[in-house]
Image (tube, rainbow, N blue to C red):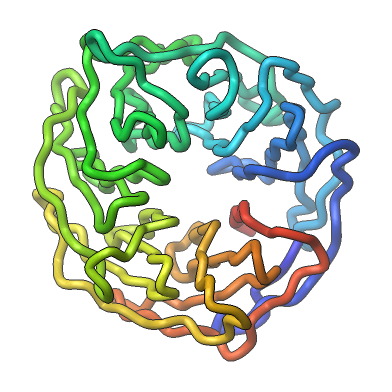
Length: 327
């Protein structure tokens, strides 16, 4: 666990929570409770409570083993704090999404069902990311293997997913990450291919329809490895080491980017593997698993980006997943 220690966003190491088997592959925090969740290789899901003053983690409840998970790569909690979903790109024949319900008082998990998608005569393959509308009515899953995004409605009582229609939308990208606008009217996808695809979201059904494609700053072939929404801004990171913020307009379109090039890489990979946004949308953390570095960037009032003075070198290997906990 690390702590933001000053207004520039510099990080310091605080404490470590034990993962008893495997390597952490994804993390998420509860939107209102001091609770953090983590998945590890092998499928185990861990649940931690965080000290309200120091943020130190302790075991909330026993880990939940899930032998069906072989490569859990994304973990996300709905904005209303009622459900958690684990996305596994290697489970089953073509990947799966597992649902969990959360105790409203403690945040403890109860394992639910597994969900897959259909796409006409095609098969969505290798799900890699999940995002939700702000009202927790709809979930969207991005598929790396089939370069597509599928929409689901969320049962408000059980968290069960029901696919919207029988087809998904195609993307020009092998989708790594997706994000939804604060208004819930636009979905963004980034991945291997170059740039960011956007899709309009029907307010009546949650159905997706293709909208626009924009190129990332830098080379024309720059792939988007990580992306997240920070308030009214969309933050996208390219494999060139460049990070951009885009104002999300009321209609979901994106404004001109504010872009910086991160400094401190020690090899030529410039790979941004993980991203996390602080609960107040003031800071974004970006991790390079190859170099064991976490970069901290401050988001200004107009979407400007400023890298902190100190790049944080963690005590762990391969710090891909990041999550922020509000204190």
